[in-house]
Amino acid sequence: SSQVPLLAASGMSKSFGGIKAVDNAEIQVATGSITGLIGPNGAGKTTLFNLLSNFIRPDKGKVVFDGEPIHHLPSYQIAQQGLVRTFQVARALSKLSVLENMLLAAQKQTGENFWQLQFQPHVVAKEEKQLEQQALAILESVGLAHKADDYAGGLSGGQRKLLEMGRALMTNPKLILLDEPAAGVNPRLIDEICDRIVQWNRKGMTFLIIEHNMDVIMSLCDRVWVLAEGRNLADGVPEEIQRNPKVLEAYLGK
Ligand code: ATP
Picture 1 (cartoon, rainbow, N blue to C red):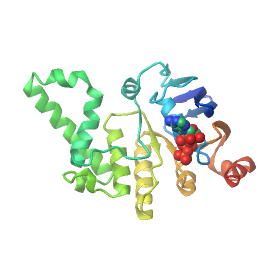
Picture 2 (picture 1 turned 135 degrees about the vertical axis):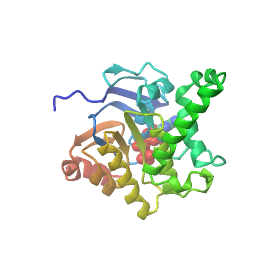
Picture 3 (picture 1 turned 90 degrees about the vertical axis):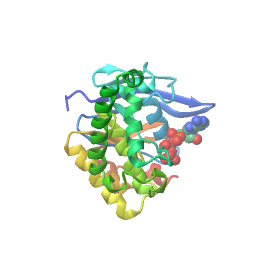
């Protein structure tokens, strides 16, 4: 379509030693879409996520988000602009409660301002109350409201994925990069995670998802991008991708 994408990255490259992990790759994510990023093991998917969010500095490449170049910005500023990511291995602090983990995710975003507010107790109280209400509403929306006061360390694999999503949502993002939301998740919870993603998408949230579970990718995604050996192999609607001979070969070849 002629619509300007929410995210457009081009010429993305990153080598580790002699290995070209990502090699002149491009990706686009349409506003309001659920976009998939797939490819065999070692294709460069996670590295591309790291480049988009500048967790790893690209050797070269251009990232335009919401109309602005962002590749020169540090990760925390990219998050402030509304591009947040989750990690393959959930990063919640296990000795804090689920609710505390949610509040911490929001606090990072406010940065220095948060500490300045400490000198005005009534403002802090109001801010905290609002943040807590937001956190509880998001926990409700990801099906974790009943776990709010439990230690994050006690959550199941699937619940941790939902908490990761909740923590991302606490930053009021425009685009969430989800790294393998279904990996290590009980099959019964996979459906629930998909439902929660769809519900947030219907409310207007845009997602870019790395996932090895093809059922998840094919049922959720509007468009799918395929990487192999760091390079773009194909992109299209799920039905096209599913029967693309180059894609089948790349998977079978591994
Ligand atoms: P998977 O599906 O198995 O998670 P992936 O598509 O996410 O794989 P990456 O993790 O991005 O692939 O890895 C791409 C290539 O870059 C691999 O050959 C990997 O070994 C290499 N690589 C990734 N990160 C590093 C690093 N920090 N140092 C050295 N090599 C790395």
